[in-house]
Amino acid sequence: MLPTPSKIQDMTCEVVHNRDCGNGLKIMRLRPLATNGAPASFECQPGQFVMLDLPASEFRFRRPFSILATYNSCDLDIYYKIVGEGTRMMQELMQGDHIQCLGPLGIGFNEPKEPETTLYIGGGIGIAPLYLMQRCVKTPGHCFYGVRGQEDIGLEFELKDAFGEENLHISTDDGSYGFHGNVCGLLEQYSDKILAAQEAYICGPTRMMEAAAALLYRINPQLRVQVSLEEHMPCGTGACTGCVVSRSDQYLPSKVCVEGPVFDARSIQWDGTLLPMSAFCEESPCPL
Amino acid sequence: MPALAPALATTVAGIRLTSPLLNASGAFNAPLFNELYPLDSALGGIVTKTVTREPLAGNPQPRTTELPGIGMLNSIGLQNPGLAYSLEKDIPALKACNVPVILSISAHSSREFAEMAASALSHPSGKLIEAFELNLSCPNVEKGGVHFGSAPDSVREAVQAVVAVSSKPVFAKLTPNVTDIVAIGGAAIEGGAQGLTAINTLLGVAIDIRRKRPVMPRVSAGYSGPGIKPVALHAIWNLHKHFPETPIMGVGGISTSEDILEFLMAGASLVQVGTSCFRNPMIFHQMIRELHAYCEAEKLDSLSQLCGCAHR
Image (cartoon, rainbow over all chains, first blue to last red):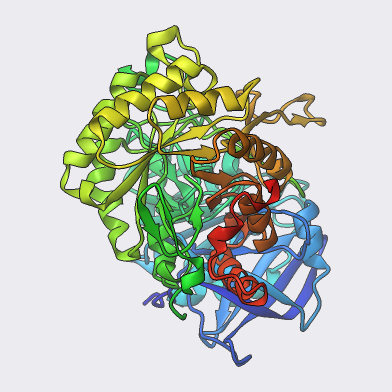
């Protein structure tokens, strides 16, 4: 059973550690504090996320991060890669520093009905919510994990521990470890597992998710595929309508932060095309 | 959270507010945060996200970009579920917040503005609406597509049309992207606006120097955040100087309680906070605590005494 998520809170968190996993990858463990300084409770579902307030004095948006793990209904781990200014600020945080963390936010993955055949397909740091799901359901499914090179695997020990060595399949773009190629090439080797599965979870770069979902549907059209989308999020709480995704089953684009970030892959308009506007709007250009 | 101090209460355009602080349209999910902490202990009113008569799907992605230190650009395209849905679902959800609701509406003609206001007030949710804020950023199809907010005639007619059907006060939200905002504000007042909201976003552009292309797909977008504060203060100063009797909701770049004091002293009666609450959704309560402390330190019976004091 998936845990019942906490109510959304803006938590002051203490950094427990901010440790290196190699090649610019890091895990930051946060401990939410109650107003009296004691640890506060926190629980979330796989695929939910938090908005972290960067340690910057000047104006910045918060940054959304999915949750890698929770411990004792309190601590939470964030898995991140240093890619820009925001994550460079995060890597500076030391044990004992404080950071504001709003969450848990969004709607996560549905619980698998048949965990032992479930497919977990991750790319890069997108592995985080899939690892959390595996830890929650415990029965190992099959994990297909694509990274650029061996040094980007980061969580090899944790993934082997969670999924079991025989269920963990890794691809590297440069061939330095496991299957030489991308995660779709890797998946094609396992069409028996795709046919046997009822559910698949995908999280990673958008193009990888689009390609992987298409491949899965081609091999097993009955498969239920859920994807966790990544978007720039100014607010993370459904106010600004900045982080939307077009979907084939509704006129209004969906807010990734509150209606997602997890969606049925079949409903996603991957090219971002907005569906036709009403006649009302076609008469004149859209306002800002 | 204690009840709001009497010194923070104010009456503007006939509406009694327990605090001069509101959220800016489209920047705050009030029902969500009301569950975390009661909004009636900080906000004097809630401004809704702008609604249009029909649902609007909005603009393509990316719709926003961060401008570190100074704010953000947005080009949302007024995505919204339309007036009917909003009256059925979104407005009733605000009831729990227990603060006056200001409905932000946008339309493509004066007639459509009036029709929207009339339908809103005749709907059962209409009793929750204490005022209208006219978002004048759409093109006016009755005037060859010129933007409402940049043409005094369009503004006057839109306000007139809404005032004619509305028992509730009407605030015209002014764009700063005009030669003379005082002329536009004057037109709104001639049309019967009981208040002005100043300012909407500035137009801005950001270039991605790696791609050598504009960041935003529609090139220009609305600039908001701390960087626009002096522009907003300039507009409020001049509007208050010319129309001292007309209440102004000041908005644009407010991120601290000191900023609020500046806005009040320049001539605002109420203030709205938008972009800054993206980073800190608890900002309203912090600001209210600080404003209360300011009133006590300055021995002010009412914060509203500050309105326009820098002019005197």
